Length: 264
Image (cartoon, rainbow, N blue to C red; front, side, top):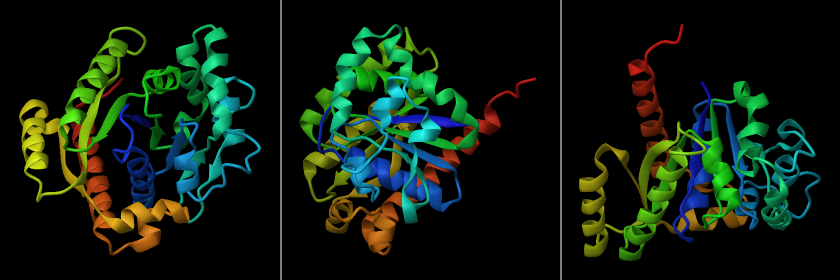
């Protein structure tokens, strides 16, 4: 079964793209077949995967508009061993173009159908806003992973995103649910970070991942070299944290698979 996971947070600078790249690389390192979709016109997941966003023949834009298939637009992310559906600034045109399409919120979901059997995981790096691109990602996904910093304003933005997920699950995508929350850029020395972490634990329970991504200079440097943290510095705290996350991720899904009833 292919798991489609949107990685979303409308607040920028929370480690969303860093999580997308390094979770994709971690899962690929365990021999999972992974597709990472860059749905952000900034193209950060594309550049961070070692692909030049300025030198692309096809991007996610052409896929969303139905001009090309995903198979035609996908590129290999190189040494990280996952597939990438890249993006660049041209993706901003999709926001306008999609408004004129019937069932505009279903475009990504429709395009993904032919490739579902090719991957174990499809990760979607969403833009830092709740626009039509994010809606397409949430309609296509089965679950949503929310990376967030343990800060006061992050809690306010979290409630808006949870409401959006709930609204879409009651309309365009009844299967959509919360995958989990991931604490990023965590500094255990900060009392505020610890307090917010406690609030998240009380409110979300086992939806809060035990794995925590620390503040780490090497982790921040890696994207500028177009590398996942394992290729840049596999001994860093950031690499250890994302490997732990991937392990927890896979264990959770195995547990879910064992409890779900078999389909005749």
